[in-house]
Image (cartoon, rainbow, N blue to C red; front, side, top):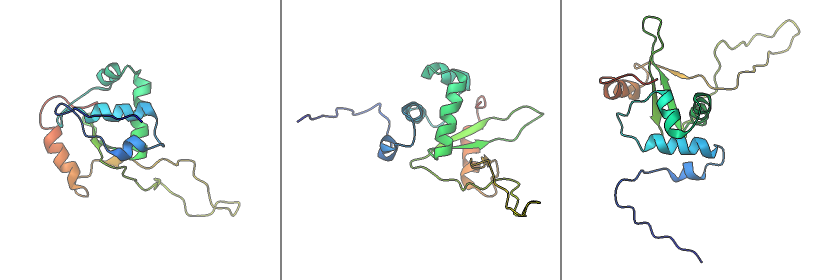
Length: 153
């Protein structure tokens, strides 16, 4: 029988056991979650720098970020555009997966000309927009993460 003794006393990161045992996400997405969780609360990053640190291409990084977002382990809050430029995104690391209802924009409840209800191909949930009136966590995040330094990518 094998045993393990954990000597970690400091310099470690708390990871939810549910994440470790989640068979729905890939190992690389799990590793990305762990890397992001190990950073400080006011950590700011660009996708290029994070991809380089993880040894991923930008496309691979986006793939695994999206996997974590759609699985609910990370919540992505898109900031409003300013002057036609993309705003920074805020990523909130969740202690358990948060499921966003798969509501689709512009749903059609009227039957089409053939008498059949339309089918929707978009199965992904809508992303959370910056709406601090409806979500106090967004306002708190804006104050703590975007009040200083460079924006997130």
